[in-house]
Image 1 (cartoon, one colour):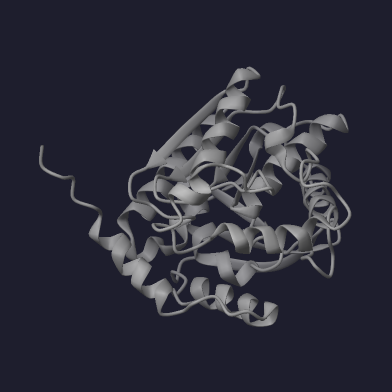
Image 2 (cartoon, rainbow, N blue to C red):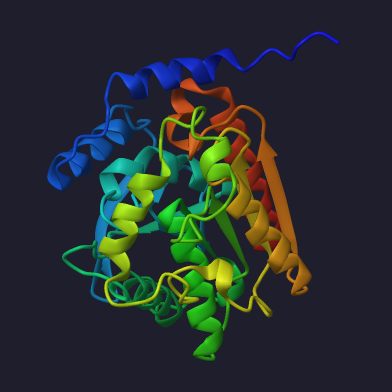
Length: 299
């Protein structure tokens, strides 16, 4: 049987990341991630508006035809220690375009300056702000990538446990839901994912969780009871180190009677959506997420 051809575009991204290795200093790491996302120009038809949401710095984006009554609350990745509105703006704006709605991205507090539960409290505050602003919960989606995917799951759990109305759906991209990083793909995919590796994840997990145990459900939602959550879309790449924990989370949610759509994208690395301007699979994944959100917020 002939071998399957690997997506050639992802090799371009691997080469790009190899040319910009992660520096040891936290401040430089933050600048590097902002530069990765900020290297792509924002389309001219995207409207950006700075705001606050429940006291949290935030940013609205919208494209022509966006339904003002529906919103995607987005929680960026970056391991809870980096990432910003700037690092994810092109990805968030394109997700909003594909879903036909406005996006509200939160600039939640980062560790180690603000360890757990600061980011979670900011996410809940942002969601409460949307409810208080008149958005129907069924017209709200929550989404996030990597740590933001884990934070999305934790936010859903916190909303459920506090008796707040849940959003219409949630979108988890390459979610980091196990801060012990104990899954087998941490080793088996180490050679194929240039974005995150286990030693780095354990380092930043300690910064984020502070005094909390790594298995605390709101820190590592893989260890939570997942009943009662809204429909979930989980997207992971077959070449990423977080593959197994994303699959395990989807399976556990499904076993808890949560409606889950799991997509495993061949050859894709951690949060390949960030590179959508030059990666067709990133554009297709955002289109699939947009269609999922449209479907579940249509009622």
